[in-house]
Image (cartoon, one colour):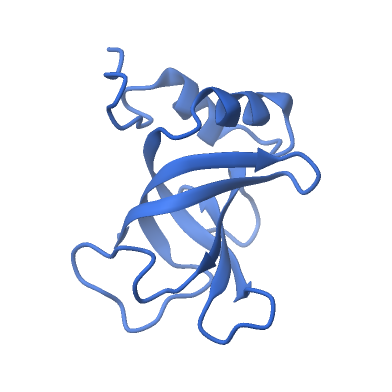
Length: 134
């Protein structure tokens, strides 16, 4: 079934998103095409934190690299999603049980708005809508 124009895209209702999340080249042209075609739309998928570091010199704001699916130290699929310049307490809009801390390896349910794809860095920027521990 096709999602409504203002509906949330998921791997279950969007074959295009499902294929994107299963891809193995995070710099592939289809990643940029998906980001451009769906800018401003909301997507939801199971993801995990692959890397996390301070945003520039901030102490409470982070850049969080998110991969598709469960965390693995040996493989990754899908785009290199990033939440950029976010505070982990407020900006992630937690639903359900809120963890005391988060970090590399955390498996999450991500709902986010598509921002843009940066071809130079191959990062697919997202704006958090809701985040949950899974």
